[in-house]
Amino acid sequence: MVKSYDPEHDIPDLSGKVIFMTGGTAGLGKETIATLAKHNPQHIVFTGRNVKAADAVVSETKAISPGVKVTFIECDQTSLASVQSAAKQFLELSDRLDIFIANAGIMGGDPGVSKDGYEVQFAINYLSHALFIKLLLPTLERTASTGNNARIVLLSSVGFRFTPSGGIVFKDLKSEQTNLPISFMQAKWFRYGQSKLAMVLHAQDLAQSHPLVTTVALHPGAIKTGLIEDKPTLDRWFLKLATYGQTVPLNQGVWNTCWAATAPVGDQLKSGLLYEPVGVPMKGTKDSESVKLREELRDWSEKELQAYS
Image 1 (tube, helix red, strand yellow):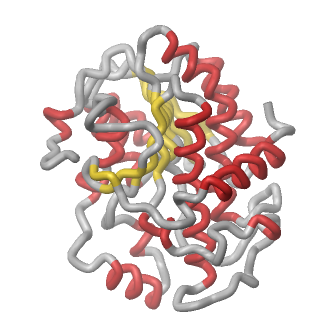
Image 2 (cartoon, helix red, strand yellow):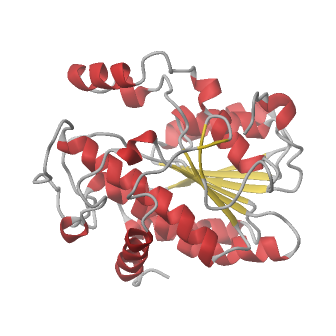
């Protein structure tokens, strides 16, 4: 447990490190880049869809740290083909990868499907990242095998606790899932919750199946970002009530991500765990601790992603 955190002093020198992060053009992603860039990584690569915003991030980052190489790769995470292309572009840029941060995500939106027909929150928040990791793991493991600590950081959410019965409804993930059973939560939040539960389960699975690479999931905290402010009035009220007294400004909202990406592995940080700010192991649920559900997710994901290599 980290009792206090100061990124200026607690993030170590990142010389020689290559960082790849999804969703870096705004919000948490943009702020994470700005924070990590101050510690001299060799290369930061980030994805997104907004080219104009990405150009601004590159310029601002170079102003902060002129010696850091910064590269944008355009990627639409509603398309597995686009993810595959982005991963290929990264591998053409670099033969090493020290830190992969699965940051991109959407929250509680209207029903929809991805370009591949999957429920859109599950597609962006989980499945696209599962494909990125599948394609990048050989490079992460090669980096780790040379004595470096390679790691994967998966941004989950406290929302992993709010899911349909059984945790993840696999049978109709290739739909808008508008027929999810509703208790006190709207279906949109169940759809969001199961995508974030998948991130927690995936971190556990990767920690066991690929021990050379340190993998953790995290809840970044309740943060003042557009993800909340852009919601309809009832959703904003619900989210603000649920996080009353807990919200932090954006610059502090990236602390847990930066800690997870750079803290020493050992007593502080252990592979396979879920952390809340900053560096505090988070209590799980029956579903997040279910080996059966974790194995079912792994088998489903392998089947869905087998065409991409």
